[in-house]
Length: 372
Image (cartoon, rainbow, N blue to C red; front, side, top):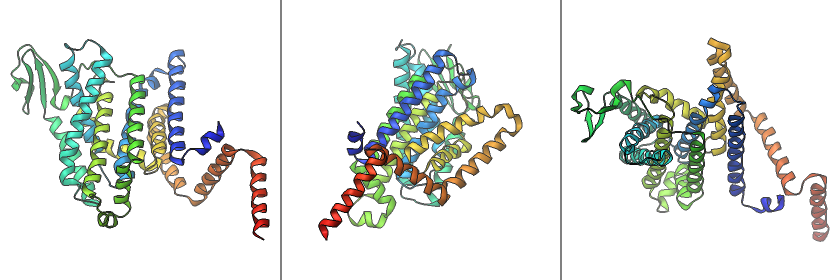
């Protein structure tokens, strides 16, 4: 088995290891939930952790793979969240199965987020650098303020929309789904840890297949040298827009799952701070490093909860840990030890131990004698 694993391509081995880590963590967490060995507060964090993992993977497509700086990723999450809630309410009478209704709501939320990403990306992807960051930041704030002034209701005649107040919806014995700055209340909590795990696997599959596809190589070529990519006929705007739209769709799906894990959700939750938090996951895990982003998202979501017993000092310690990890990840000494550990693991996987190194030395000597 180790020999078969060693013969695989490096990116295939890396992807399989990432899948194995995700599945192992799911099995351990699910067993802890089943046996009651996990606290209620941590159990409630499992679905948000899955959502933040999906957000980190999706943003990595833009920041790490495409090489663009996006500061409005929470905007796509909010589009998917509130679209998914409206879709779930509309499907409630037609679809009795909760898992099917959750799936359809997630798909609809992702589709609307992809549409918004396409409309925003058409002009935005012609920019780069600081200009792109500023425009995406403005987009995130615009979406938040639009949702703060959006009122949506549902009655027997269908959906009703207003930008003034709930009283202007003109409904007859209906229910208000989105109540402006108060957000959505009375949400059916359809999300589950299993659904979050499946969404993480789906997001991971989409991201890894895109990265290692022909389109992914074109996206990275544009990232590395835009002028050289254009000189060989690569449509730079097309491939940058592709990464942006796929990232927006995955963020929208995560947003829909996230919204249906709470009883109520407000637009303020998806503000600039959330976009920066997701960016921290990506930077801390390593830009372009999918596995690192997953680990960073999980650890940094759990850490504030685990530090709650400290009280007022927990966010201070959280900030100190962030700074320490950032300094360590940019240290040449730490990188040297990490590279040594990886080399040791590769030697163990290719045959292991003393015999493998001895065989290598013998081969080199034989080659040298033959050359002489």
